[in-house]
Length: 187
Image 1 (cartoon, rainbow, N blue to C red):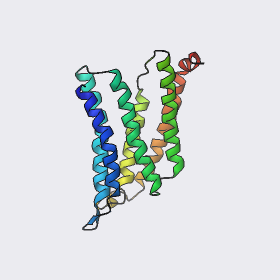
Image 2: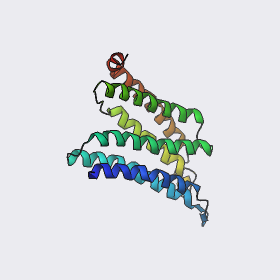
Image 3: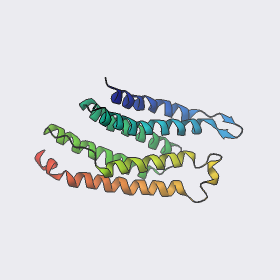
């Protein structure tokens, strides 16, 4: 297994660690240790998305396994965070449903394409979608933590989530529209 795929697998392994950190209810000097730790783990895990892609391209380690694992790791990390945010009432469920539905739709298109022997590369809108979702999730995780409360004098976390939802919907539309011929061949 190459280095790029090992980095991707590390992202998958960080998902349960992220969730366990969220369960920590210890306060130290009025600081919620679990949320801080979870935010740090989420940022590290999200960073590996850029690192594994860079390594794969730079070291020419692009593999079919990597093409499968990378989007899977992204989805696991984001969906885990979304479900937790809904569970603790930090996000309305309809936002999580829109984001998760987009992922199912894109995965369906990819499966149809793969059945036809076509590999569909990620678009720039898919990359922007991932970045906006990561920013929004981190903003929601830290918006009520000291000392970040001072940074959020206006509802940045809410604005970031709206931007993520809009980009998510548009990137899903763009993906389906650009690959509509693949969908027709799968009928």
